[in-house]
Every structure is written in structure tokens, then in C-alpha cells.
Image 1 (cartoon, rainbow, N blue to C red):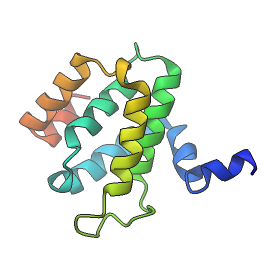
Image 2: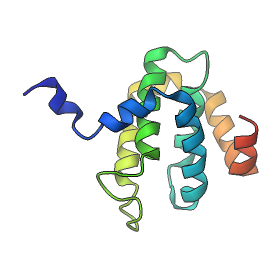
Image 3: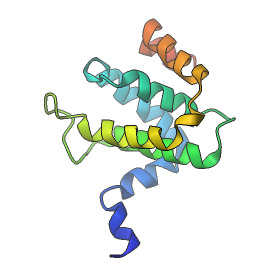
Length: 128
């Protein structure tokens, strides 16, 4: 099996992850639209803050940006509009990325995520 077979379906996310500003902009747009449906919103935001932290190593940023890019892509393996099932693939990709780099997601990232959720997504985006 060729190594490209392992990445089947993730190529668009890989390309998008290379454009950090596009990820940043599109992340907030999608998050505002779906926040009420996301049981993993705090983890997603903590991963976001870690990915854009200048202190985070590049390989960790790359893993998290890939997972975030998968979240913001308009197409998925499982459509996000399906009740209950819609975000399972996004959650699985994010959980895998977080597990790979968990030691780099600091308490500061988690506190920032909690604070962003508490004060509201619009205010969190404005503070970026």
C-alpha cells in the first residue's frame, strides 16, 4: 500500500492547514455557526489557541492546524448537518491530534478556551 493511501480524504485539510490566516478566519466563521452543537467546543478552542501560540513547536502546530482545517472544511466523511452524527468525524480527528500532542496544550490554552466560551465567541474572535 502506498503512503498516499493513508491520507485519502485528508488532502484538502492538509492544503488548507498551510494557509494559517485562512484557517484563522474560517475557524471563527464555522465555530459561530455550530457552537451550540459541539460537545467538544472547549477542546477545539484549546487546540486552536495552542496551534496559534508562538511557543508551540512547529510539528505540534502542524498536527493541530490539520485537525482544525478538517473541522472547517465544508465537506466531511460524515455531513455536519446530520443530528448527533454530524460532528463525530471532526471529534475523532481532533481527539487523535490532541492525543498526539496533549503535553503541548497547556493550562493557559485551556483557560483561554474556557474564557472565550464564557464571554462569547464574537468577543473571543475580537481579542485575537
